[in-house]
Length: 354
Image (tube, rainbow, N blue to C red; front, top):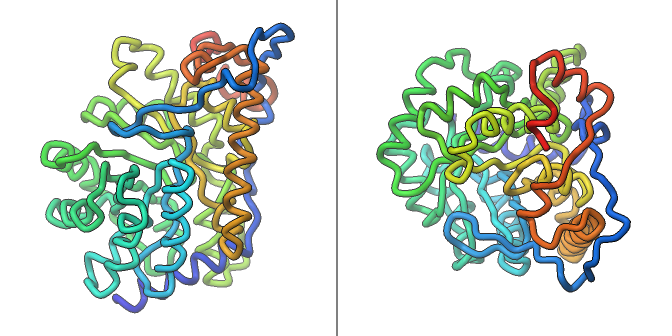
């Protein structure tokens, strides 16, 4: 079983590199920011910094969970952690399930903290991980928070995957009670509806990563890994712009809770313009994974991607008249097409998202 999980890590990376995003769009083409022709700002005025998990970040970016759990991926995590340290952005490790089953692979995770001793580093576990395992995952990398990933769709696509998803809510509540660090509940690419978001907030969750559809598709990865010919399952999920709107709607309806609750937007966000739209909709942080994985062979290419992303964010803030991220979140958005239709049919009042 250990060998199966570890081998699967390598197969996931290979398939991620081979596959394009989708088939669903991330939805941000239907989200529009309002141009400010008279911003009265200069580029040097724009401040992208924020405090997240008690630490200062220079940019609202999280290198989201990619890999870990196999000796061959240690170098990948070293490169990603070095990038996070250089650019002063947050980073999450991949699922630590393999480490909990085989202590020999812990170094593939701990290298992240070694390379990034002062930065924001986030642990990552399955939703059915026992409390003792979750606490071990935190301890091994001296994590500032721990992600609990919800991956039911991925498990169903795996021939050897889980078929019983009962008990997840209880595990999350127990972890919240006993964890020494904040708990982040995240989807892995299929989104969180407003109904599920409300349940999670009520359970005491204060950090959500919407993990919407439109980027890396773990159902597609699993089906291609098994050489399944029917790809219809790959179109399952809630596009990122839509799941972000659903989650933010729950917070706007209960605005008194907003300061204590945090939202990360992940899922097919491929440039700073899309990132700016997500931030304007209310996200605190933008999660990135696929674009960095595809540039791993050249560390300079990863650095340039982050720099270009930052440049696009800066332009978007300036051209909306926003000096800081907080001001961008106060800017109105206009919704069109499928995203607008979805929100209307779901009873989400568009003005509450602006």
